[in-house]
Length: 456
Image (cartoon, rainbow, N blue to C red; front, top):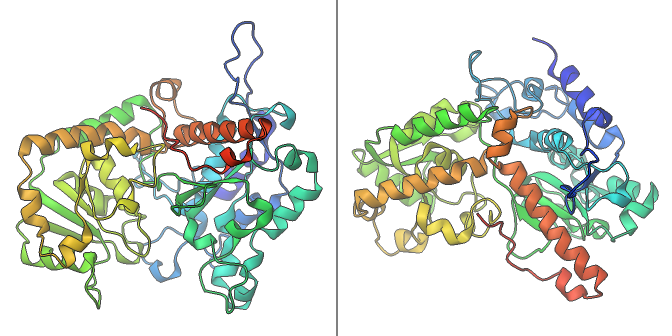
């Protein structure tokens, strides 16, 4: 197999090869949608991909080496990873930390790119923040330096073509961070430094940027969550429809499923309650052990049981959201949430909050853990027709959380807006609102936390 790095890098380094929106008489189809891709030195993106060897800062989790994809192979197919099977057309062993590189690849494919930043409505920074953070979170010798994550980028932007940054004070800049915002929001003044996190989102020089993260905090106005990537990346409308048809007709004999770590917690919490119920009701519940990253690079392990289940339980873990939510949506397995932060307050551009009651179930975790509410009994009481209706709705949502493959067919691109399309629409909408407030001299509107979900 060709070295994935040698295949991947030339496309990322060659912006000029990508077609721009053509000049034409008539309406300007790119009005309000022009994006300038900021030129950054390779040390902020392409060079970071070279640190994929196990002797550097591995992309794969060393504790899950037996089930993970070899780090450099994760770069195959422009960051989607190797195919799950040689004949697979849509399924890949995707490492979520390469979402930044894949998003960059997809932005390069867009029309409405502007060579001149003065003509652009938004500026995209192709900075691979999660990869750049690895030395700070994996090398004990650099732990005390984690507050400097992103400082080199801020210094570069302030001195190289500084007019790009100063024109709108950074309010028109956006970038992707392949992780939870919590992992990049440690206070720069914390001593001693906390292991596993940096202070990227606390840098004052980047305070006006929009950060697209896999999970946002509830209050900072500059963050917005985008879906965790699954392993499904169709390249044609036929492939997408074929999968949705399979999920629609799948026979679901299992009432509920939990995919996640299978070890019992030491103190009462919602995950422990779920595992306890599943142990007592094996006739109604299936547990898929995904500990140690077993399911992240082997989607068959969890997707097949999800296709056979009516409900998929989505308890919070270390943070409120989880990739399993999006795997469940893709499988047509109705998600069951135990707190609002798990998704309802996270993914408004992709899963509008007003629709949640149509495709999911909410059970307060306190009622389950301390109030004696039984999950199995609650879900068994849902009428079968209501379950089928929710399944139809959840499969209607599925294309919105899929990251389609780069180079997909025009038919798919025209028929469906995927996770990248909706993220770009959302960020452009947000930037337009901010820059309008800036131009009108109304700074209080810039920082307002208005509802900015994209209408269906």
